[in-house]
Length: 601
Image (cartoon, rainbow, N blue to C red; front, side, top):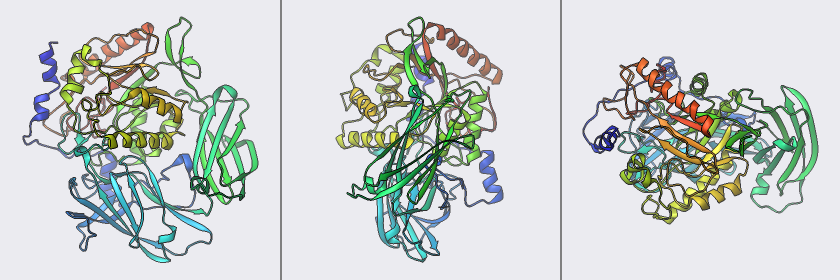
C-alpha cells in the first residue's frame, strides 16, 4: 500500500471535516432493559470489591441538575438526571454537552434516620469528570480534580438527623486544556469520541468507626509463599500522633475455608505491615484464576478483600530469548484493545452484566489479555477480570494541550524512521505546561494506588503514541518506586526512550515483524480491520485501518493476521494487542458492534 493510500485510509481529511454527520442512537440489551423497565437506580452492586464493607447506601438514581453559565447555585433546576450517567449520554435523560465555560450542578436529598454513636459517614465517588466541589447542607465538604480517579469525602461534620441536601458543582475543560481526558473530544470524530462530564461512576456512602481502614495494600510474594498486607487507618494518613492501639484480626480463606488466622495489636498512627504465610500455594493464571479471600477486623472496622498468587517478570527462556513470564514461565499474552465505551452511556458501563459480557466475549475469542485503553474502569470491572481470568494492561490517562496528530500519530504510523524522537521537547508532544506535567504525575500515582490490589493487572502503560508524552525514563522510575511488582510499557507505539521493560510498537498497514533485542518485543497494537454492519453503526462516516465487505472476509483477514502472530511467537514475539474489542462511534474496527448485538468474528 502506498503512503498516500495509507494517509487516505487514516481519513485525515474527514477528521478535519466539520460538515454535518448522521448519527444513530444505538442501544445495548442492558440499556434497553433500563428503558423498558424504567429502572432509575442502576449499578446497585457494591462498587469496590477490593475494599468492601457491609453497611452502605447506593446513591445512584434520579438527581436534579442544572447547567449554568456562571458559578452560582441554581435557583431553578433544569430537570432530572439519572446518575451515574453523564448529561451527554442517552441514559442520563439529558443529552446535552457541557461546555468548558459552563457549570454542571447536581442535587439530591439524603435522609438520615439517626447518626450512630462513634461513627463517621464517608461519601464515595467512583469518578467525576473533571473538577468538582461537594456541598452538604450548604457546607463545602470537599473538592476534587481528576476525571478518572475515585475519591472519598468524610461528611460527618456536615450532616444532621433527617433531611440532608447534597449538591455537587462540576466543571470540565475536556480537550481545551492540559488535563487528563483520554479519548474525549468536544468535536468527536475518527479515533476520538464524544466528550462527557460530571458523575460517571457510582456514588455511595457508608458508615465507618471513628478509626477505620482507609488504605489497604496487598502484595503477593510469590517466591516466598506469602502475602504482605499494609494497612493504614485514617488516623495514620492524617499523621495524627497517637499511642492508641487497636486489635487486628485477619482471616485467610481458601474457598470459604479458613486456612490461616492472625491476631495482633497495632498502633493506629502507624502503618501496620502483616505477613501471612501460605502453605500449599495455589497460583493464579488466566486458565485457573484462583483467588484467596481475606477478612480484616481492625478495631471496630471490618473489610473484605481478595488476592491471587501470581508473579509478572521479564526473563530469558531456555534458548536465551527474552520473554514475558507469568509465575516464572514464558506466557504469551494474546491481547485485545478495549476502550470501554457504550452507545447509550459512553464511559459508564450500562450494568455489571455488560462488563462481564465484554470480558467473557474476549475470552471466548481466544484472548487472555485486555489492554484497557485511555480509561480507568469501575473497580468491579477489574474484579471480574480477576475472577474470570483475564490479564490487564492498564493505560494511564493521557492529557496535554491540543495534539498535532499529523506529527505525533499519523506520520509515525507510516514512516518508521520518524518514530525516534526525544520526549523532552515538551511542545512537540503538547506538554509545554509544567502544571499539566505535574498533574499527570499526581494522577498516575493515584491510579496505581487505586488499582494496586487488582490481581489481573500485569502492566502499566504510561504513554500512547506520544499523546502528552514527556520524560518517559524519569516517569518509569517514578512508577517503579510506587509499584515494583508489575511490568511497565513506558511508551506504547513509538518515541521509545529505552525505558520500560519491553519494546512496544504499533504496526498497521505493514507486515508484522519481530525486532530482536535484549528486551522482550511486543506488538501493542495491530489489526484494526473494519466492517460496517447494517443497522448497527453509529454514524454514516467510518474510520478504521482498511475494510472488509462481509463477516467472512473479515474472519479471513483476521485469521491471516493471527497466523502471522503465531509464527512470530517462535521468533520472540511476547505479546500482541489486536485493535479492537468493539466498534466505537465512527470506528467500526471492533470484533463486536458498538451495541454488542453482533459478534463479527
